[in-house]
Image (cartoon, rainbow, N blue to C red):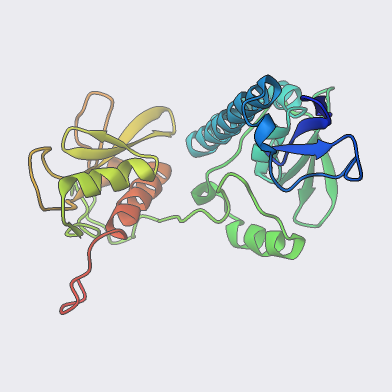
Length: 287
């Protein structure tokens, strides 16, 4: 975006998301100013740029949230859709360097480019740039990536930083000795909070939803949608602690652990662990 005239002797523009001014006259002509002059603070062009910056920030957040949803749900994403949105800087920032998988499950790589013709360019584990043109691709949840450790090591070598947390996302595998008939997990139960509102606030700050007495995380696990839930106390309670974690089908029925898929298990445990991490720790017992 270029510089716009704003009043006598000034121009304004968005620079790194902030409204910035520069002088157009005098000895400071062409020099970018450290702060907006008082005469510009309420100028219409400045106000328009501020509103535009706010919209860009919301758009960027929405793009990241959508890509995260695609990744967590492992839904197939049309390649031509990625090609269309790639030209948008916010979409490109959210998608760039995510691990994608095409028709061949062994053809795994970091997404580096998407052309208008619908061709994707990815860097594979051999460091080669590979061109893919499948009808759809997946942005796999890390728990489904068999080469996760190799991908993490290679990403470190390349200096890759993903905008959407994928390969460095905390994951949990269901223990081999887990009681498949059980319907809940208590590993992260008992995290004490001074008020129920403090715990509910942590739920929402982490991006999860409060539904009555539970923190919930909805996950598409295979062909169905599963809801992981952690008890956080009734709304009228004062001091509360995190309760057990359980999983439920779309009709609200509680699932046995044996019936919980790998993504739903991992995301449920991730939520429970994140809530538990915000507990108040007793200085005496350390619990």
